[in-house]
Length: 113
Length: 116
Image (cartoon, rainbow over all chains, first blue to last red; front, side, top):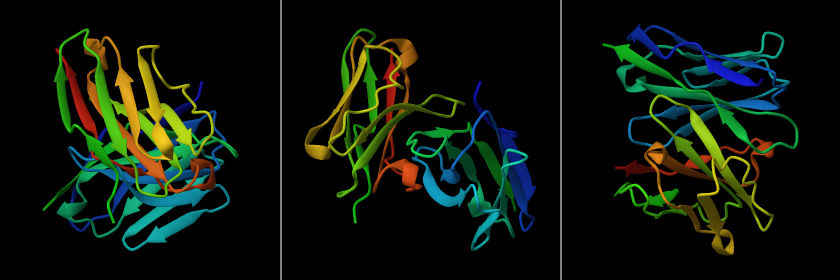
């Protein structure tokens, strides 16, 4: 069966360190993968998209990698700040022509001052 | 510009009652999605509208759930004869075009539904 898993429900990290979040999937051949941020009581906010033919994408302090052999995406926040504390969701589109995004359950990141 | 708005923000209802949840997408966005998010769970796809095409209702959990999108803009999600397991946050999202093109989804703040 198809599964998308974010390995940690919660991750605590010291301010200034690099946070690394993991998203694994099985039985998908995603055309692309997206990462969203969700704050309590709010809807998710789009952060980054990476396509199947891309290895890495960067945006300011954010970096996403996509390894279609390992079936894994890593999401990095460098020089983490308390304001980065939130739940981060990965989502993938299952294949060309598909329009359904499937979301992981998310990882709650807490950056400790 | 305005983002996606949803109303009401909170809804408390009694088991067996019908509820209507409203979504106003971003103007010009042709794709509209409804999701459900239960405590500790990921976003569960419910229904997808794209332009004037027939909606994809494959995620609706039962025939008590229905949705429509009038004039390609505002959408209403209706839950009939609500059950306690319907309690969740219902999120609406819109995107410029279909997600197949990689378009980011813009989410509303959600409606928190509590069924007593």
